[in-house]
Length: 281
View: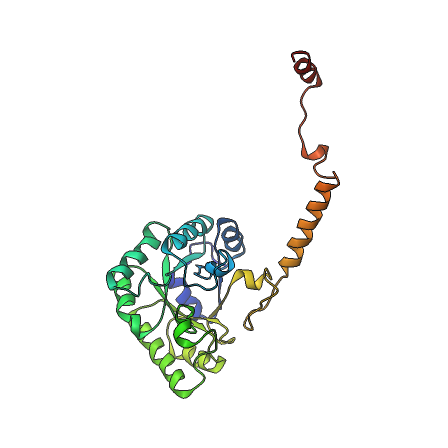
């Protein structure tokens, strides 16, 4: 693990050296600090925060203000990891000017090191303009959650020849535009392998198999916060839902039965002062 700040150059060097890139979503200072301390390469402040932190039905309602707020918190916890802000729905689709201005806010106001933009050729002019403004861009193709109403829900993309060819073409377009890496979400593993071999920039997979240059998961999914919904592409590395609930139940019981707090959790003042206070009443 390197001690210096993770950069786009470092990520490309990892791909060249055949070393895998680790990436997780982060939404707050505390979790970001822990991820940074153990050596996660990239902290993605994903618009998934709408679903796993804010309780929205999907990512579409997430605002720029919410993204800036959470990205700022994550950046304060990251010393080594690269922080990437996810550009939310309608923060870049409207115009090139909107795209550049909002991307700039992630860098200037939230101290991110780059932004992630969903889509391919339809938003290529926005991506090119952001990069020309000096802001690193991570691409995102395959399943793009901001387009769920067009693609018909959360399902694997690129299973037919035509759709696979489109994903390949868009990946090459994004590479030529200058993105520093591309997230491949929910595409067949062998298509992801082909893309990884064809591209000179790193691929980061989520539901795209083991041949990508790196992997990303939503941290709440991989830590088992919500056991009632576990995406197929997620492996739960812990089941914190049951652990946290057990701790909460123990807390409730100990408070109700008077076991918490005890003397070790409290401070004490001189009894003579107490007596004087009582005498003064």
